[in-house]
Length: 259
Length: 331
Picture 1 (tube, rainbow over the protein chains, first blue to last red):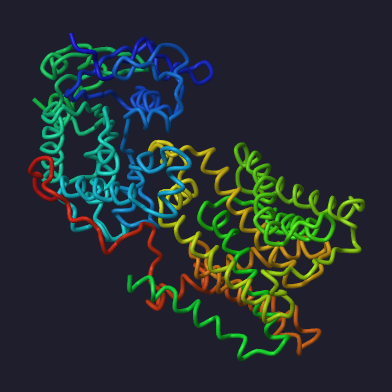
Picture 2 (cartoon, rainbow over the protein chains, first blue to last red):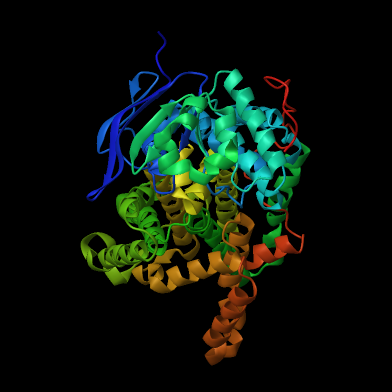
């Protein structure tokens, strides 16, 4: 049996007396898209942040390819291969598209203090390699022609793709997308759907938090449902959609509209 | 290659400046060049990395005193004292970085003001070493038998150092380090999630900025020939901040413009005697209100100044090879 890409084992995150995430366990296989859904305040973002390292788990373990990353600070988790996008697009306005994507490749240029200094001052070989990787990623996403544009000049959907490019450029082990379809038109959502499938087919593991349920149920291999910080259901999209607990806790009218 | 030669042209042109100056104007130009180095360092910290630290003037003093005291009292050559001045300031600047790990904005500013006052207090009161308010004379350095005396000779030394520091600054800003500085200014969470070690990057920017202050301080001692602690107090700091804000934070050329104006303006206004400080203040306020991006921001807006690149080798930008698989439409 293969080692799961990500294992979340009995993880709790407490803020004071409140358990925002309460003993949640899940495992994501290599090349799996895992949807994470639940009503507002269910703990999706907190769980997301716990995996990224922005909040630390009060209890439990998080393993990436079998390695314990529970106590690693966020930048070390990024080095280990955990990359994310943000719910509201976070790009640096002072930088153009290519420079924003290069930010995601920081570690490939920063490794080794002396080597890094020599590269900055003299050769810039790593910088050139990183630029090649960044351009390839932009090309893969079909936005290579935007490389030298300021990010402020892009459409909302294009900005979202730049953010995904920044997360994809270092070839992460786990890609975490926080509501990638929010604010997109139906045609753009369909394109996002295609991109996620393509990434999955190439072996990428994706953790997907999304409120656009049609997208989640469409692309996810399996879905985990959170409510009040607890995992209340999980399984294939069909099983989750049929689970009465999920319908009661969350889906309601939205679910009826979906089917 | 052609671009490199083009980039060298302004510096070569500057070499001819002593043909046009008298002693006094040459002295002012030397001071401007010193301040370009100092302001470039502050621009890293305040402009690019967005750290509100107020110890830059005091760190410049550390550099000036390191070079002057080593030369005057220990007998170590100025050419060795110059890099040591940068290193000494960087080491002390790192102390300020420790508070930056925990504090932000106005709190960091307060702590660093106190830190700067402490440094100046030590310069004033540790008389056994620093000679206190009596000040220190820097002996005339000599380079392979060529005495660096007189403002025109000093100019070439200061010019060479400033050009080197400028080149260094550009290289850093065009690299992942410069982009990391901007990332921690804009959004530390974003920086972390992209693998940037935030405490390390902050330490780096404090040390680097202090290194520039230290080198600038040593050059300042060379230009003046005589230094006292009072040169590195709060007034100098305010002038340096004004230079960054007025010239344009987040732009090296802007910092240089700010250094030029704030060094030259008091000299130009000297004829107005009592009104000097009033005019100085009014000019500053008007500039900040009218041009929030500083002079460099305005020039960029007008299309005179090109946007500053934050990555190298645009010309050789690799055209992407075949993508891993066919992209699926354009968004």
